[in-house]
Image (cartoon, rainbow, N blue to C red; front, side):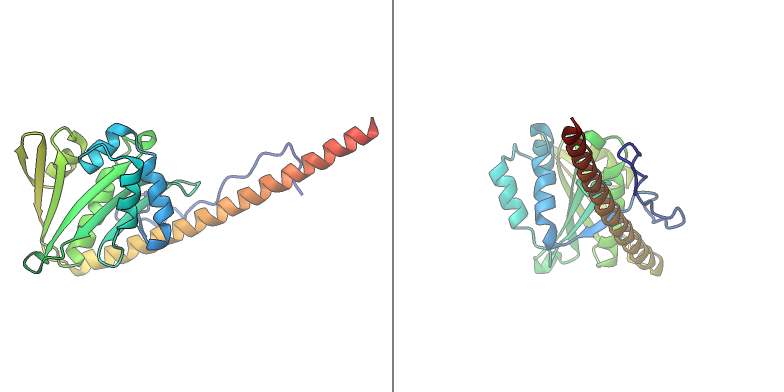
Length: 229
């Protein structure tokens, strides 16, 4: 049993050999059971980031409605988690319900300010593009405010055509057909992300247990100290 002064061991790490096509950053598909995490992530966005993400200054109630109306059977939500299992970046790939636009989809992304500058938006875009191709999407649409330089830069880098109309811009990216390589890459990416998430869950449970154990030991030691006085 470790002493109260012993440092906590490092969390379990994902094997270095288990790399996805998005590099060292696992990107996991998110299910309906994690609406709470999505809501927490979006509510953590500051006012300006909410404005850039939704195109208007979304308040807490509007974000709550957006999360509640997410269609997990039709769309795909991707997320990046930290070691505390907080959702620090997420993307929403929305597929069209229109019969004449079945091969179209829209992309939206949000990244917490504390982790900005790490390329998470671009990695989520890359992951979404691969999934869209594998689902038969040929035209990816991005609606963004013209001042959202980061999002527009990601689109342009991917080869999208960007059309500006005053304060708003629309980016259109034509996608090639899926290949065996894109399908295999997506399978590997999802397996790596799910494995990484399970390891983070195990590490968090271990840390929580160890902290609770050390807290009990401190309480016992303090009780003995008081009784000896």
